[in-house]
Image (cartoon, rainbow over all chains, first blue to last red; front, side, top):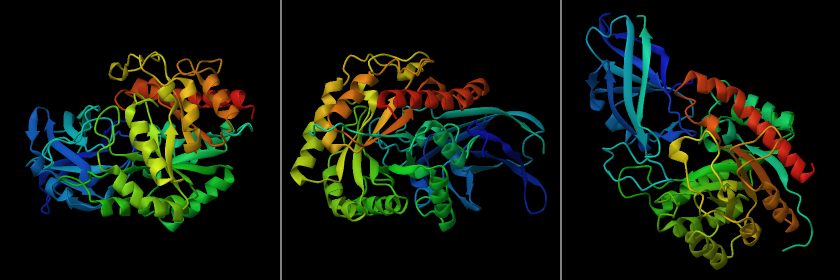
Length: 144
Length: 302
């Protein structure tokens, strides 16, 4: 079971490198769409935390224990199971402070009905799921 | 058309529970909900198959256990014919056929004989992307082998008189003579007014909708339909869709397919953004489905 919102507070915490130094943070995301998606049809945007932007190409995505970059996902022949979280890992030396944070992200996908075909054949946009808002945000409390 | 009265089965599409599944409701919870209503068949979506497209033997065994325990029969498997899964201009015909075959096998394994096949479209009216005939025709022998019937969904704002329905899909059926391609007629196509509480982006003018009598020509090519509903009142009436008229036409014309309740009302919108809305959906969605099933029982007489 996952939380009812797309951005999950459960799993939101700072991360450490192999020497135990805080090197960033992570959180989980679950699409709100009614079906699962192939990762090849997913389009990820940047992340913003408290106004600080983290470029989408610097993000690491973890799914079922394996890590991928955005670019690698374009060739990932894997189905993102319905209601299964994807971990967003963000590098930020020192991590986030203990307390509340406003987390925002953009996510879209290539939809095969209810609109025009995707215009950016290179996958650089947010797909063609135009009828759904690609902006997600949540205020979350970080404890560690 | 037969003069013998039809005897459709009363069922539910699991899509109706989608905003609760995996959040507060397991698949088995959904089976129990459906059992409570007296429905006898159901639509599953490929996405609700754990491990899709390769579910484990354990999952499959449990699926059949639930079908038996809750006395529910597989009706339709909702799947997608997606030819833009990779960057670039699109999949080849052979790649599409392989994709369809994979889902046909799975449908057969899970007991489904109908499919809601979502062919890639290019606009809100769901005009199909040119070239669909090639991969669908090449997949027909496999549909026959696995005993499944692909159905294009006629979904609002598409009507039964939208040109591509006759000019492309019906022409294809007549040209090939196939018994493995047809229509899932979503009852939203008959909707004549806005339901209260729908988000603004879903508002329509309802000037051009399908008239009930239009369904008759399409019944020979339909095996399962989405009995879409958006607002069930406490008297067990759908307030925006002329149910009694459409169901009577189906029965009088000898139609004995599956009617699958599919909820798409206001409670499902925005429930992932707001705790109060989600709380409302928790109560409202199962209630709306139960009300709809009572209406269907009243109309069908069973």
